[in-house]
Amino acid sequence: MRNEKTRHWCSKALVGLLAGLLASAAAADEGPRRTAAQPTRIASARRLPAGKDHAAVHSMVRPAVYYRRTWGIDIVGVRPVASGLMLRFDYRVVDPTLAAVLTDRQSKPYLIDQASRTALAVPAMENVGELRQIAPLEAGRTYFMIFGNPGRVVKRGSRVTIMVGNFRAEELVVQ
Image (cartoon, rainbow, N blue to C red; front, side):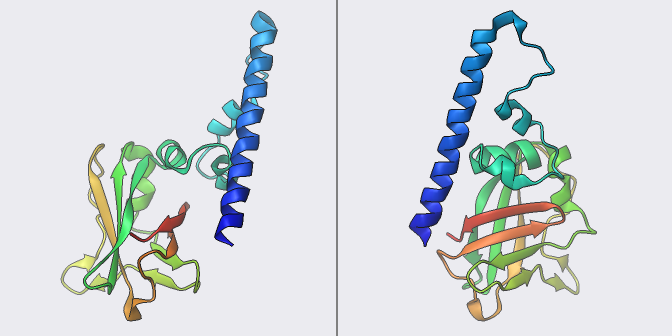
C-alpha cells in the first residue's frame, strides 16, 4: 500500500515536472509575443490563495515548499513526549502573516491518526490553558503544539494529519 502511494505521488510529480518543462519550453519559443494574460500551468499553481484546494498545489511542488509558500512555516516534525502520552508538533515560522492561522484562538487544533482515524485534541490545563503557543509570531522562531495521546494510540512511525482551521498538514510521520 505504501509503495503504491509513493509510486502514485512520484508519477503525479513527474507529470507536473514534465508539464512545467513543456510550458517553459513553449514560453521560450514564443519569445516577446507572450503576454501576461497567458500564464504557464506552474506559475498559476503558485498563485493559488490559501483557501483553495491544496491538493492541486501538493501535486506540483514538494510539500516543504508548499507549506512555506502557502502557510508561511517549515514543519520541524511530530514526536512523542511524556513517555508517549503526548505528541509535540513543532513548526518554524517563515512568514508570520501567513502562519497566523496556527495561533488563532477560535480554531481548535486536531491531530488525526491516519490508520485508526482517531482525532486527538490539544489538552487545556486549568492554570496553564491550552498546551500550544498563541503569542505573536516572529519569523525564524520555532513554535509548538502539544496533543494528548491517551492510551498511546499514535506511535513512532505512524502517519498523522494536523488540522487547525483551514490549515492541513498531511502524511506527517511521527519521529
